[in-house]
Image (cartoon, rainbow, N blue to C red; front, side):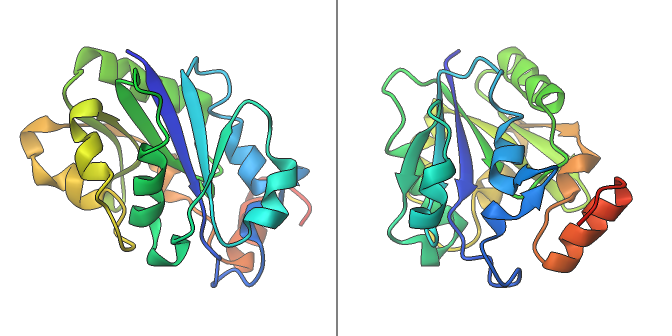
Length: 196
């Protein structure tokens, strides 16, 4: 298995009212906080998709990731994921899709998803939480063509639900936490005894 990570960070965070990807979380930008869970997984490639604030975010990007700018980021997550698929190395067998605003996802949880993907190489592997199956999720290469055609703001949810027999899930309550507003960021910090 050769797995690429794709982290979606292209939105303009309209509900947040600023550059959410650069919001301070544990003393570093949220994007880097979320990216750190992917760094030591042994991924063959890591792609971060930027869009709205690419020029502001680019200077903080670590050198171990490939940065892709989606010119059509306004079309939503589906468009950003599709743009990343086109950048994958030709020998990639699976893609691990994650978001830049799920701060509670750990490397341990991502490793558990990867372990499940090794057991079920032709299946889609997804975190299971309040909203049902969702990201982080792993797709095999047979799904790459469908992922590359995504557009709009639906992301890959419809693909996850399309064939129940090909979906394996792992309980992951931490995936339910995503930060969309400044109030949610404050709540996240206060719950962990962090200073805003």
